[in-house]
Image (cartoon, rainbow, N blue to C red):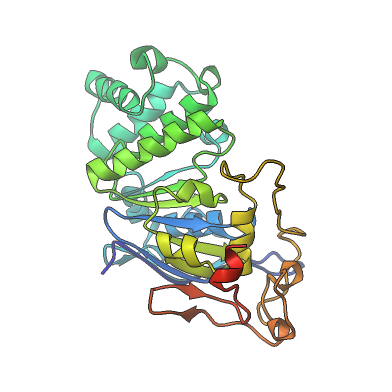
Length: 328
């Protein structure tokens, strides 16, 4: 059994008098201890909602969550709130997308870090402050003792992200969920944050679920990658297999949108046409069909099934892109 097993996870937002929105639609994946798994897709594809459902952080009203999210034999979706509060931060931690809005603006960084240590490790006073300084130093924040007294607005974007990571790893969690941890950071800081996460996984054996819209971010660190679109998994494979033989047009489009250093001078990027709002209901056909360059009539004949190959490569497409076409 994997450390985290997500099976048929669905999340529906339902408000009175409005049309229901199925943000996550039957998503399944596993994360083993010490493994890095990627969850990739554009904004609005259901990545963050998936992570919030696993953590039990979605609102109780107007939301229906079904399926399973089994962590170490315990279904987190059916666990009471008191038990979840004990698990969150201690066994399962999350690095949120926007550090400026995730950190309390009127509370010093030191107090926010020591709060985790007090709640889950029973540390108080000088012992907690010393450990908090050590955590900030561990994630690469200079002069950590001084930084403990500062407020979030006094730190740069990279430092705020590092402070969030320090809070997340304070209790050496067995599972770490990183939701777009490099958003709005420049390339140099982005590389440093990714290297820091890789070191944490290697040194502590923590399982890492990496959520991002950028396939380039997961290329160097994920063992396996799941591509989401309109709430469903449209392609899933080990990293090397996916980059060598991607089959779903959406995955091809995501890769084509990334600038390449080895591209000929003057070559233009190939963005995906339309927006994530241009979708077809899965019950009628492939949700990506309105934006797909490889569309055929069969794409709107009903919901495509997830087909698996011998290389643990799954794709949800009736007219997949073949390897020779991908290389063009």
